[in-house]
Length: 393
Image (cartoon, rainbow, N blue to C red):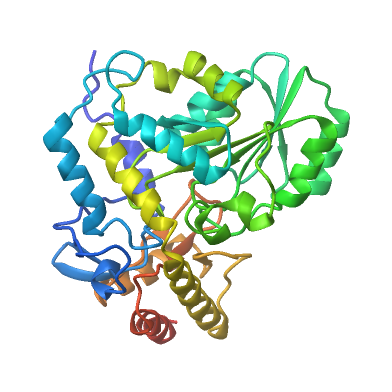
């Protein structure tokens, strides 16, 4: 029998604790004629009743609004249409898919690469393909939800190490016996904005013979002059390192990739369920990602602007005495109190035309404002946020 009023009690509980979520869909997009223009319109979002300064985007380089990227997608649609029609292993691929994979491999310094439909799909497809019964996955306690779910799906034993604590990781690696071991970590943690200590982690993996699985979704296009976390630390791509990244953040497109040795990619082609059982990304998305990848490699001025804006915002928040945890990147959390206080500040910012949603449990253990700086923000945008925060607080 279908229950009438299903979930009403649960929803009321969430509402009483200020934990309900709301969706604010954009009313219109913003497209600029050239990639990388420092036009503050790219740091705006049209929602509700008008235009707001957007501090909630992962479009770190302002690429999502670049006409050169959208034009590539439009041109491809005239050639291939919109839908892919089937999985990649049937007839869903295109020459843009294979060209993008070659470009990603060259970009990440690996033998091969493979395109998948999203970062979430990539993680829950790859980890269960490379780890199973008798294996152990060592996972940072603050890894993205998709890695947590991937560990569950893999049927491997899970060993959770304290956040970025390589001493604890080493201790666990010395005590756990397994057929195969994998260390899985975000490179940039999406809620705290800090960076995994990859130099130490890679050394532990090299010494123990473990695979290293990196979720570089927020590192690609942001760290290492855009090349990602390995370049940031000066670590060469090795056959035992598997890099996952996305096109949907700093690269301004959509989809995900995995880069690694040819054997690894061949294995994933044969076993990754998210590839085998999903309709392929449309060719127009692959074409847009290919154009974005080309653009980002020649746009060093965008990285300079991104990090200048990040430092201006970070210093300003610290000068206000705000708790920004251990942020090292354009992702800057602001801890201001309990859920209700955090919501009140977020709502007041919204009233004053600044979009900065509150992040609440269970997404994070401590509620926060998650502020992201981008290359599209002007100094005036950042100073406006700082001024209003000072007035509110």
